[in-house]
Length: 136
Image (cartoon, rainbow, N blue to C red; front, side, top):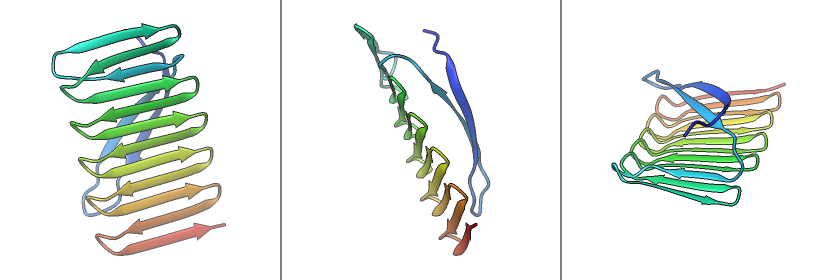
């Protein structure tokens, strides 16, 4: 199943370890994908499509402009609602939210929070106890 790529996001985690990840956000008309072992279920409901695959435990929901990706193996959640995008890595415990110009990155493993809200930038690294706030 081919899904067009909406945008590609590169996030670099701030903390004692520097890691990067790329999430490709997809756009479809009410598409839900969930990854489960080698077992895959595809349901097409009008414009709504559901795919379940629970080996990687990946869930992708594209509802109009809203896209949600959950990978519970990596425990990753990506939500794209209009301009609002949320990426959560619960294995790394990282949350990235893109809301218009607002961006929030939370790495709870490294305990790092990065928030980009308009021109407002907040960086909190609780592991290394670093707080950077730029509101200009």
